[in-house]
Amino acid sequence: MSESLSNSAKRVQNALNEHNLELEVVELPESARTSQEAADAIGCEVSQIAKSLIFRGKESDTPILVIASGDNKVNERKLKAAVDEKVEKPDDDYVYEETGFAAGGIPPVGHKEDIVTYIDEDLMEQKVIWAAAGTPNTVFCITPQDLLEITNGEIIDVK
Image 1 (cartoon, rainbow, N blue to C red):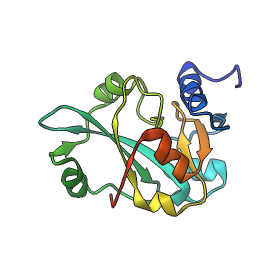
Image 2 (cartoon, one colour):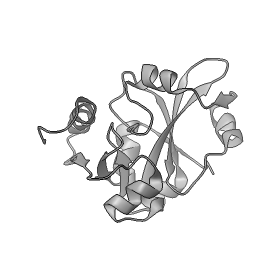
Image 3 (cartoon, rainbow, N blue to C red):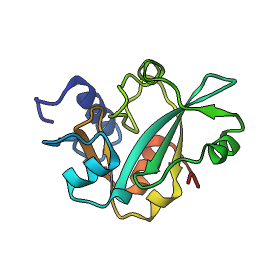
Image 4 (cartoon, rainbow, N blue to C red):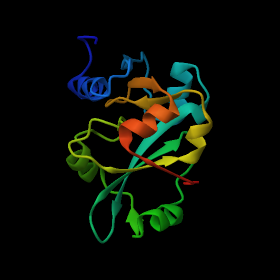
């Protein structure tokens, strides 16, 4: 692991290491805050970007992680049906409080607590995908099947 990684990126690398997969967090020279920026910096298709989005259950105040393909917009009605509760996009303070990561670099693993996770079915069609690793310019490459396993996610149609 690179000693130059931020504490957030190191936390993600440590979480990946716990799963005994040979996955490495890499720091990009440019920002990867958006799916398009990430795809441009990595040299992949936007559909290979696994963007991690935090939603909040309106009644339960529970965080919900959706890992969506970079070219898909999450349909909140479909998410509501999956979680059986109305959902909303929370503010950045809530995201940080629940995950320990700032918006723009939310990873699929390494959160403060386990978070119920839903994975966009379109990601499962990719050979490899790229996910944020705790900061706007750190990422890691993973297969969709490994992502499903390390997150204990549920595959759903989110678009």
